[in-house]
Each structure stands twice: as structure tokens, then as C-alpha cells.
Length: 168
Image (cartoon, rainbow, N blue to C red):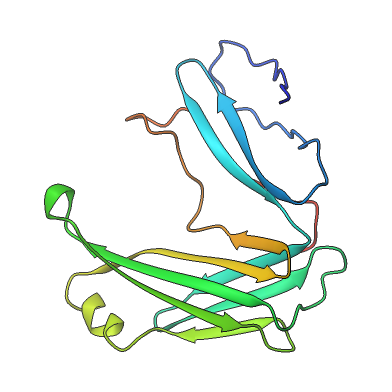
């Protein structure tokens, strides 16, 4: 457990802080960010792998690279999950597809979405999440699902963005 005092004041102005995570040991960690009456628990993964994922209208592409030299990583397992939904509240419907694909010699994975997916988008469904995780031996690297997250309050008070010192 470690704590970093940010020196924030009561002026409620946005501040950018860089807070290093005090470990180089691979694994999953929870970072808790607390403010006035807000709290966010952020999962942070330390890994020697770096996974980037992009979803298009009919396929997803994932690229796995080495965190140490930026080179492609071949032969790693990539698990992909695609969620679509429609409606809100109790009437919300969700459908998911999953697949497992190995990276090629360039560290790439291309996943053409399953046949039932495309017609649903024309019928009021929307893409709600594309998530991925790569694994090679004991190393695991998740790709972030869509953008920044906010705390669970009605009005977001704490925002966080994770950055890396490794090449993308």
C-alpha cells in the first residue's frame, strides 16, 4: 500500500498530476483515487506486452508489441469480446460475441465480426464495448475498452487517464 498526497486545494480547478506506480513487477494492481466525496478504483496492469485494439464497422484489429523494444509479438493468444446493446434500463438488451485468435508474425490479429452482428446495427443496436486481452506465457496485457471512465456519481467529479512511458 502506498499513498501520494496531491496537494489539491478547494479551488475545484482541474489539475494534471503524474503519479508513478512504485513497481516494475508484472501483475494486476488496484489504484484508488479519492476526492471530496468521490472515489474511483482503477485497475492497472504492469506487463512487458502492449496491446492496442481498434474496432471498425465490420472488423476489429489488434496489434501486440513488446513493451521493451516496441517490436511485434508473434504467436500470442488474443481474446476479443464485442458487446452490442439497445434500449435502456429494464428493457435494455445485450448481445456478446467472443473469439480467440493468435497473433501473426507482425503481432496482428484481424477479427471479422460474426454474420449476425452487422444486420443488428441497422436494426437499432449499437456497439457498446470492444475489449481484448493478450497472453503470452505468464505475461498478460489487456487493452482498454472505450475511453476514460468516470466515478459512479451523477455528476463526474474525478476523471482519470492512464498513460505509459512505453512507445505505442
